[in-house]
Length: 212
Image 1 (tube, rainbow, N blue to C red):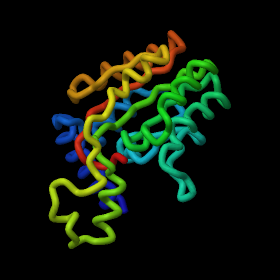
Image 2 (tube, rainbow, N blue to C red):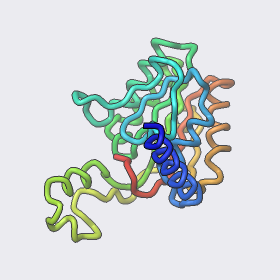
Image 3 (cartoon, helix red, strand yellow):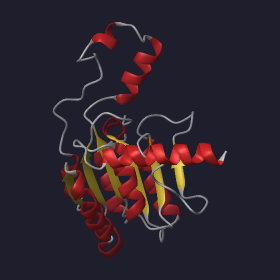
């Protein structure tokens, strides 16, 4: 058992070392940076994109992921609910770009401002419906989609600048496309949420690897 754990831990480290240099950003690196930046008591809502092997939680009731009953886009609203229930706890929502659009972003950011619910939103933006691609390939591994570079209903072109939607509601927004700049961006966003009591959003430009 100990040997298996050591092997698994070593594999995670090897993958993380490679991810740290990868651009667009790798979700494993983003998860690691969030782990380093977040308060130990932060409540984190994860809709598909935070890898628990790189982001640990030491206390109960701090991590909430997708259930089999949930629909796409539940994460940002759930984060507002968590902040409403625990106003003194830091709250973060980690979502894919597709899930974020399903959450009705304008309404989410308006509600955050209207009800004084400062939350940090981290959008892992890979400009694609990763869940659609995975489901299609799982059902038809040798189908037409597996041989196409532009599978139907997967790519999300001409996405809006998500950070500007947050800014339009009075929050702080920042686009992150360099892996070395992510720790600093997280620090700035967390400071805004904590010290200025304003919502913040990081639009993190990611490569394929787990986002919806």
